[in-house]
Image (cartoon, rainbow over all chains, first blue to last red; front, side, top):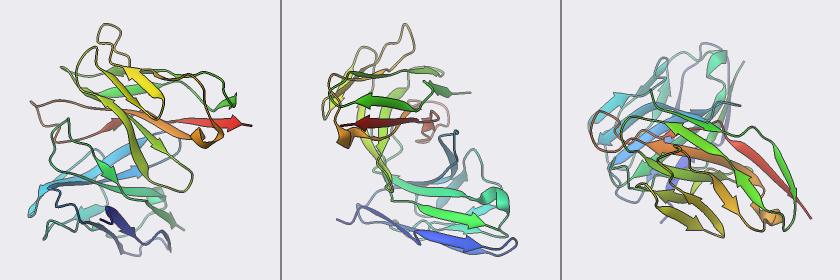
Length: 114
Length: 116
């Protein structure tokens, strides 16, 4: 099992550009989510999905879109990048959204918006 | 809303010293509690968890006990190693009921550096 994979590892964008951060898991997990990590703030939930075709907003969804067409993939789209979106992005997955299920994190994508 | 507060870092220790990282939480109901560890350049890994009051989670020599009366989940290790140098995050998930939908609420993280 590769677990949770994310691409790219690093990305530099200019203000206004768009891009998609890729996330995939091979554990047949129903629940997937995206977090951003900023210094001194821990991780904050952007969007999540409880299964293919079902997504919802988290704590900080503005400026980001998601879709979930398959169980395996959960891409995060930045529509028009802003410097405030400079951050490290983590994708996570778990068997379900039960509070007792372990969530597995990917290695992260470090994004810089100039 | 839910929140997690961790002790301020960074924490610097010598090898074989004792470690305690304090964590307190505010949440509705009875959350599950977690400690995650992030090694340099890597993603987060689950270190240990506890899903009900008085449970003790343990892994790799680390322990934490779910204390409902003090709303705390302090991380402890009796003898740290250089390889324990990492960022440690305390987190919670609200249990069934409401619309938590697996949302982890994290503390701000504590940087631990262990010197030989």
